[in-house]
Length: 186
Image (cartoon, rainbow, N blue to C red; front, side):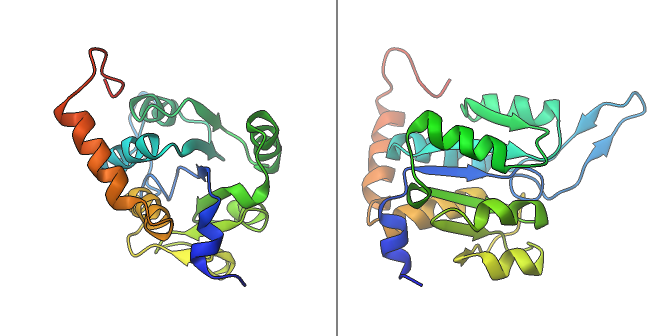
């Protein structure tokens, strides 16, 4: 297996699972059937870091959830495949749409449904609380569990491997301190 710096060098996109990565996997159901999920705000900041770095972000969730769509919109993630059990179908659509190859894509997951994509991409990442077989498939395992900022941690790890994290954080800080007339983050 190649070293992580070389695997990360060409990464242009991070695709993420949702339940168990952006959330802790819990689903709250109200008496009227409303579904609520707990997301971590630091992952939202991670999406801003990714945009500043020029990394594309995509979500593929095995479960359909309006909460996922709402959170993706807040994070400015435009491509969301919600309720897709066979993740290979949207994965192949994404590659074709963006003209990317497997070696330009990272994927972060936590459960068995994620393994088929993790085996294809250059950079499979598992969260700390992932199912053991998912961890075995991963090149990198985050220190944080899903719903605790693992998404942002993975993004920062990729940028660190690319020797770009400091540069991206400085650029983001400059954007926050000197926002353009139309703030792309609001």
